[in-house]
Image 1 (tube, one colour):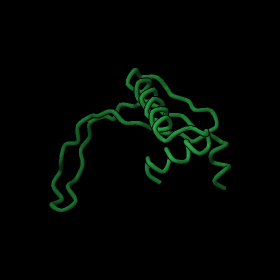
Image 2: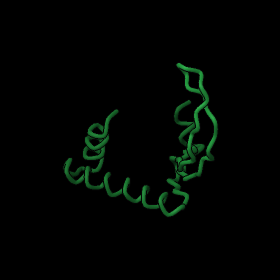
Image 3: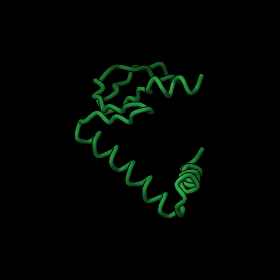
Image 4: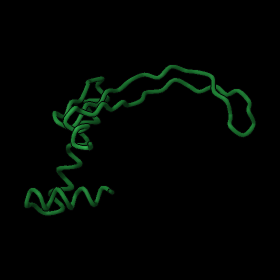
Length: 90
C-alpha cells in the first residue's frame, strides 16, 4: 500500500476530499516526526508507539570483500505494535 492508497482510504472513510486527507496525513506525520526529533515517545493508542534511539558505533564486515568497516553511530526509530494491532493481525 502506497501513500496515495492511504490518502484515498482516509478520504473515503472521513467523507472528505483527497486533498484534505493528504493535508491531514502530512500533518499527522509531521507531528510524529517532530515528537521523535524532540526525543519524545510517540504513542498512538490502539496502533503502537514510536521511540527514537541512539545506535552506537560498531565494526561491521563488507559482504563482498570481507574487510572490516566502521559503522558510525546514528539515530534510529523503533516501533512497538500495540496489543490490539497484534491481535487484529492474528
